[in-house]
Image 1: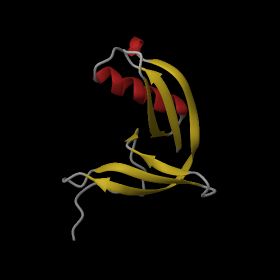
Image 2: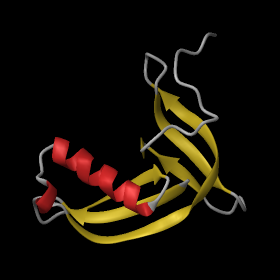
Image 3: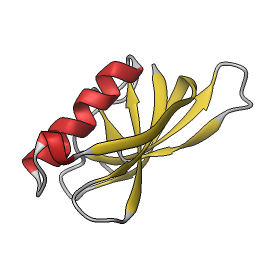
Image 4: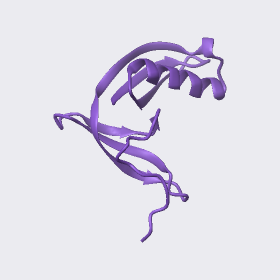
Length: 104
């Protein structure tokens, strides 16, 4: 999976940034457009100024979960372990991570 960052203008003049975990840059862009379309903006109002691939993510862990046990934020590392970061949006949950409650 890849991690892609998008810098965009939604409806105003404020530049915004989102980072998304996806299988491709195109899939991440479509997810961003869908997410913003479901919010306050129309698809054509999303003006992507710049986008780039941050890294190829191969290792994942859950940084935080909601009260139902669903992941909220993921940590990721690249294959060479030089790239790493945190994302709160993804197109699909990586296979090695589980949804659901954690029993303590």
